[in-house]
Image (tube, rainbow, N blue to C red):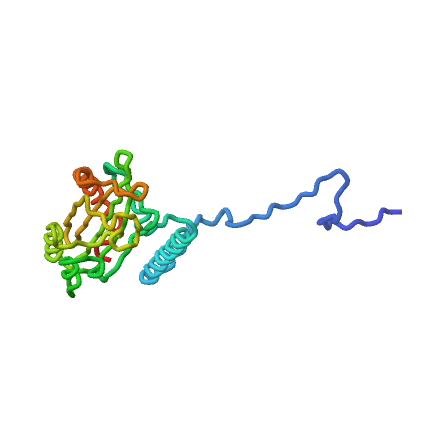
Length: 255
């Protein structure tokens, strides 16, 4: 019998792998073909900006930063930041001097009044009672140790309306027999019997529209007066040292 006839070439490709043979997979060429020339890619054109809009945004950013900074400062100040305390006669710093002055226990704070005339006597009262003369008078009383003796020291600050009127006041009060501003013992605010006033020591000072007047005497002991005319020189020195207290009891010239 003759062999069956087999079809001649070309034979159809086999649809399965032969045992032990590796299947060949053709490489896929991606991107540019080798025969194509290389092309440079040009960057995309930058987007056009509006200069006015740019500056407006910058300005808005600066304003926002300023507002936030202001708010932060406000809260720091409110919640415990540095704060300035208004100066009062009780907290004002006292300049150094010869004697140590302490507010009298019966008058721990200065007394202030715009009716200057009622706090003076004799010719001084007549002057201060005139309209357009005096703005206010401030009175205080201190004690000081003077070689083991207690001195009572009255300090009065008179604010006049101008420098000329202040000069007229001090020219009047520095003369004897013309009256003066009342000390707080003379006014009866502080009792120190048998003293009826403090007049054994005296000094005064003129600064612009302000006149400071200081009078002193030694405090009674066991109900008896202990000061004499011989004490005037030392009490005058006490009064001169106490002139610095004027700026303490009335620190605001324009108030």
